[in-house]
Length: 147
Image (cartoon, rainbow, N blue to C red; front, side, top):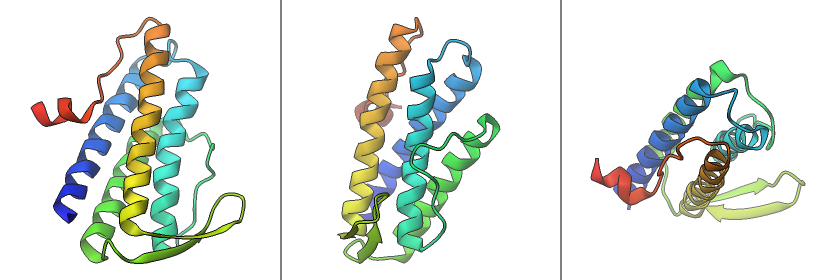
């Protein structure tokens, strides 16, 4: 199962990187909503890693400097990969959500959640890219596996 999650983490990192690169090349065309969603994807991933690692968390909707986006994406991937290699997927994590409510979930559930969350928002960005006249990036998992 860990190999499967590592594969999905690589998929997630790959398409986030392509979106970041597209944004950096087309800043004037990307909508503000698309930029917000891209930052949100990276922030949410960082937040979930930080909850597992008991580290400082980003804000859910914070805007990051453009020149830090690739670095954040890379650090998210590295931190998730380290969690995957050092921790058990069944380990239960106690955490508080952004409203301060307490919850518990396994690392496996958390990983599945934020990967699914990222996929959802990448789909929204694709729609917004098309509306802005850009060619959307097909970020479907099966396309990643065809490379």
